[in-house]
Length: 301
Image (cartoon, helix red, strand yellow):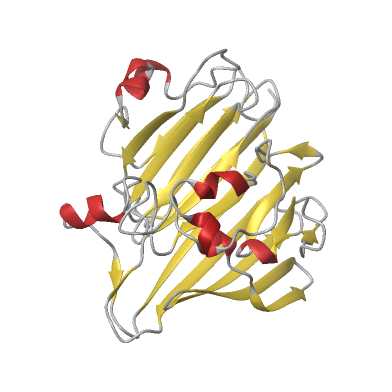
């Protein structure tokens, strides 16, 4: 189905191999570490971008292939709101000025995406001999008016990493347990940090962790799977991404953990506006956000 779409496969010795999707906003698709798949891939799989007419309402879901990271925004994140569809249109924008740089230590991809008046310049780096892929973005308002600019990084982990007995630990929060979004999530609050396996008839569970940040300004969430012998840590700049949403969907055909650093809620821009928390950028202003995904082998006794 994705025939004709561009793809850049980055493969490095002793590091994270990852597919970059230039026609989907330079988001990250399938990824591996030492041959172990890391990303959850949905039944939709790789698909071309949708057009504006297809992105109304919940249309975004029909082309959500999962992958290691899908960017949500830049006009809206979460529920359809104020004329913008679910999770906005960013991940359906083609990358411009794409370049790949090879150094002695890393492979680097750069590109530019336009979403309305907002311009996003992205740099992706995966290093030789280090299980890390880093994404650094600069969003700039090219318009003449103050513009809403929510953003969320939808990091999607699946089997075998997110399988029993995997556990999740979130550091730099101001609470011992997250806040459930709805009664379905509240019902399973006690197990928010454990991979539940596949559960017939299960519905999605969404939580929010209130991030306070660490001394270095970065927060992190770690999935630890002793049976697989791997640990994966997501780190992000808590100064510009002060919120963390967690998505668990254990139904057959899903089995996914979503870790989602953001500067907004997942209730849509109208809800954030009503709470006085809608992120905006003034004309000419810019904002830098960064995440890093790190994988390592567990140390054996």
